[in-house]
Image (cartoon, rainbow, N blue to C red; front, side):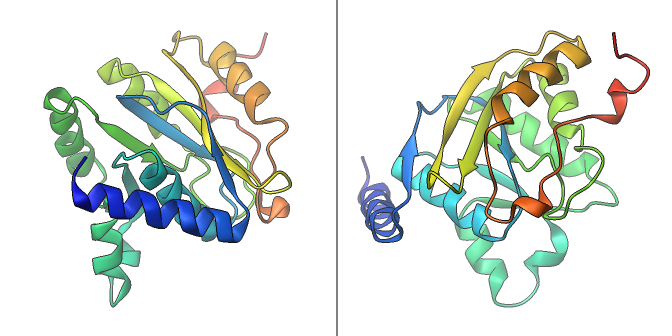
Length: 195
């Protein structure tokens, strides 16, 4: 382990201990990380601490407007990837090319897409997983238990409703820092496919 990773891991463990948060689960080697519930800017901080505690680098998609001013270098140093929401294709293509050669490629996506309550999740994580064959990992935080961690990792079946039922079941008891901002896991693609 390099000195850089050792310093990051020790810092993460200290900050987690001081804030009384704990990490759980086993980190995947490769895949698409779906992070939820996403209700606060603290979600990003906790995700970074989770990654550092596990000595992994997450390429976390972050909207390009946040890469302005003094926050930009911090975001880049943490592994955040600037995403142009008007034209995300180029960023995604570059990241997927990296996924083919990187043994520990982890792409993090906040599928809720916003910290406010909405009707649907963004389906980018689903499409990217289907196109690449990369499994998804359900990463989470749960404010009442002060837990942040790695949930199950699995390949999508292609049955959108069944896959989302599995995702809904996992997140059903997870509560965000600001619960009123939670969006129930549901994709527009499920409309008209209910059984």
